[in-house]
Length: 145
Image (cartoon, rainbow, N blue to C red; front, side, top):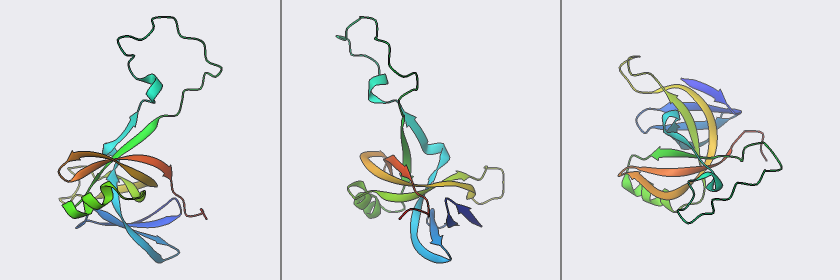
């Protein structure tokens, strides 16, 4: 199944849990697929629980009522340990975010739909023997320079 998201043509490769990313019919690269279920919005540093020795004074009113931007994190699974080790310390890379097909729908696992293309950076945290936590840097679109 081919989908058009953020200006790119994406096709899921089930054997490697990755996707082909094309632009104007030309193959750009093969990128990992991150699942919507593994996306996590983390609190910004100033919203974390206060330390035990923190002041108990009332907080000052803020100039804006708009909440601070939240950081987003997503788990990326890899097929082999060598690829995971390379990405753990590598430069930012691109992933496709997808919604997984419901378990009862067809026998095979796969993509129900792609939701976006994102640039991520590994945080260095291993979530399992074959997955890393990554911080979402930005959404990638085909119209960018």
